[in-house]
Length: 277
Image (cartoon, rainbow, N blue to C red; front, side, top):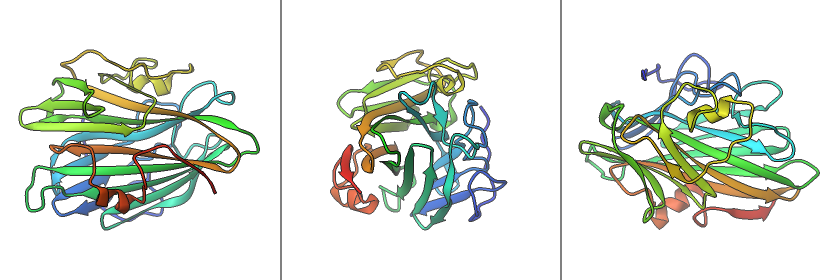
């Protein structure tokens, strides 16, 4: 895999030529150029960096979202700017430690919020990214919606490293040397981890590029290898009803935020909040 840092800029739309960044202390998250893919069915997209020392110590290659509406979609789609599968209803906005974006798809709206936290203060070894995804059924019928959050870690720059599912943390974990990377999907329906791939239909990254319906199966395979992993949430919403997801990426610190951190991202509980709007 190859990583690249784009020029840091505030853009009218993520996915164009440059990049955006959010930071807190020494922790930094970068939405690289092309972070929002222009096509909804290819494997790539979601290029991002999670740094524990400003622009140094990057541990992340990709982080992005997929979706499928049961009974409507016959496959998974990436959040993208592609016409026909959904497009951003508002531009990415990044300032300070927070970034937001809204996507309006055919049957639902997705409101993303990213908050970066430097969990070790003046230290340069820890970072935590909290992502909330508010899903609202904008159709006139009940919809069963599947949301996937995918991440590709390269701990300490390694492309071959141990990884596992930590049942105590309910998190996927990849390690190399002194670097431990966590991915936790709060209240998720399923998880899966497997080696990096460019082959359509191959777990986990290749699932989004095939023409089939894929569900994660709570397995971890292939380690040690180049880790990729994802969490899946499956829920049914009535018209106008909203479901809120929390997913966390963290470096050298457990993925469970403090109660005060939940207030930062506006989440009253761990995950799965369902309410009318």
